[in-house]
Length: 254
Image (cartoon, rainbow, N blue to C red):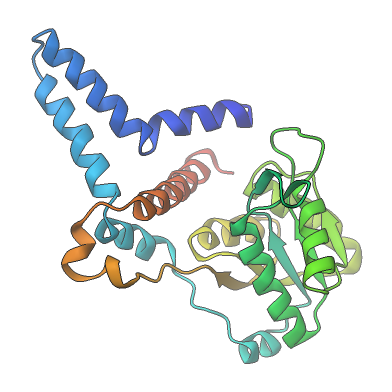
């Protein structure tokens, strides 16, 4: 199954596309006076509302953010031999940079990897592919940002991956000759459970180094957590994608 086709399916299933599709179908059923149209319409509306609230967003985050933040002391005591940072998407055709570069989410991961490298002196591997065949891998941008903007050297890079399981498989190919089996894995906190599982399947001992935790702001607490907010909806899409990915790996034995 191509990455492009998978993304289209996600758009039609995950919010806001999935709930809006239910609302449309329910509306057409009501217009045609079909039975159940009201239920379908209401289900779509309710799903769109719930996934846009910080309250539900927080529940989804709690289900995924299982690994605590890694302190510098814990990293130094962990026995990790290298830091592996996973790609997090790109900022396409950025006019201020004269071309594509790392996305804000990817820079968040790279910043934390640089922080850990300065604290530990461990070598870094960047692991990001080119799933849409643009001709430039995420690893290329990641190396550039780390070395030119954070002044942190990159020891290894791989740009072949199309998904998280590929990240682990190709990292194994790259790091095996260096006899590296224990790694500090950097990715977002919500992405960490699936990432740890994938890397452990390839024989790595993983020290989780999550970043980008869900930390509700002032307008996302108390009664305000029941109000729909665009940022909460965006995060819910990420979290639902991860939960579906974990189910997919479990069902198909990836």
